[in-house]
Structures are given as C-alpha cells and as structure tokens.
Image (tube, chains in turn green, yellow):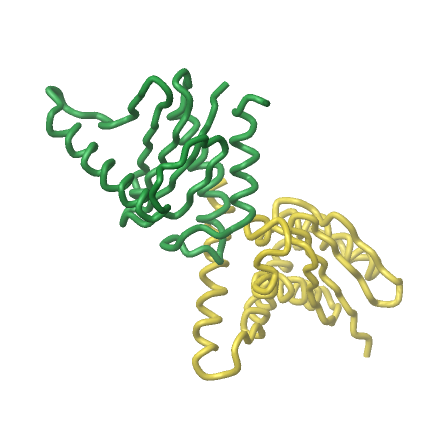
Length: 142
Length: 156
C-alpha cells in the first residue's frame, strides 16, 4: 500500500505538463509556476551532482530522496520526460509504479491521442480520470 | 501488437496532413479527401478479404460480413450492434471505436471526432461498392468512444 501525495510531469524542456495531488496536507507557499521551476531546477542540479560525485560508473543516477515524512521518487524516460512522485516513507516498488504510469497511461492516452500536443500542458480529461483510477487503487482507503 | 499502433499513428498523421493541406485554400475542415482515401482503400481491401468466400445471399448477409469479419480484421473487434429497417438503412454501432478510445471518455474533444471517423466511413462505402452495393455512409458520435455508422443503400 502506497500513499501517493502528488505527481509532477515535466517534458525535456522543463515545461510542467501535468500536476495532480491526492493527499497534500501542506502547501509550499509559492505559486504553482514557481514551485514547478524550483522542482525542475533542483532535480537538474541533483542529477548532475549525483553523476559527478559518484565514485563508480553511474547506471541510473538519482532515483529518490527520503525524509522522515515523505519520499520523492524520480523517473526519467529516454525521451526526456520526467515523472516525480511524492509518497509516504514506506512505499515499495515506486519506480515500477512510475514506469506503469508512463507506459499505461501517458503513452496510451496522450501520445496516442491525435489532438494532444506533446509540448503543451495536458488537458485531456480521459488521461486525468485514468490516472486518478490508477493512483486510487494504491492509496489506502480512508 | 506493433502493427496496430503504426496504423493508428499513420491515420492520425493522415488526418492532420489532409486538414492542413485543405485549410490553406478551400473552406476549413473538408473531409471529402479523407473519405475518398478510405473509399479506395476499402474497395481494394474487400477484394482481398472475400477472395475465398462464395457470393453473398443478400444485402443483409453482406452487412453482417462487414460487421463481423471485415471489422474484426481492421479494428480487431466486431461491430457491437447492427440495426436495419429492412428498407436499405443500416446502423452499425461500435461502442469502442478504435480511433476514438484514446481521445476522450465523455464530451471533451467532441468537435474533432468527425475527422477521425471520415476515413472509416469511406472504407465502409468502398467495401460495399466493390460488393455491388452503392451507398452513402455517414457517422454519428454522441458520446465517445462509441460511434454509429449510418449506411443508406442507394437503389437505382
């Protein structure tokens, strides 16, 4: 059982394509745009830092960070799409979850959708509802 | 299946190419080119598909073939419902039309749905034409992804 707090999807140019929250109890105090820029910039620096400081050859690079209250998971596709998921501390197999979100929901309902422009924020309601259904099956019922 | 996806992407590009080339000079959203492309394709496909079949008993048998074998070979599923008034009007209902399933589940994007069914209207018309049935095929989309194709047989 994984508690999913929220999800960010960025394209390879840093545009926030989608943001959704299911369980966010505290807001960051800055606007959505600023938060997205901060998130993207931070992850860019983290990825680069992780690669540089690594004492061995990096395979996948930065995967996630954990605090005592939440964990932030990061998944980047070969096409440069970045999926960021905030979950509870004890979540297992989140990388697999992110991969499923990409292949079963993003590719199915956005890439294969003829009207969706891949460079613009996502507006498809079908995508939103499929994503909600998918995440709710992991969230514990309140 | 890899080939299913390539046909869908090809269809998407076909629609946007036809629409972008007609938008420049003529009135916007001219779908007749798309319909004609489908007509030619359907005309030839049906020749290949029925090469081993005997002649159809009557019009209704032909329609049933279109709903089952023809539709399954192209869309990987048969038509969900066929209705007729026995006087030359047939309605084919597909509850999950393959080009609409990824568009939306509700009324979002309803205004662009016609362009993604034009090719298939032509396909049906072409297939029927080569089987000896001249018709007019239109499509009606009320709530995606379900789609209804209205076939009006033209008897001279």
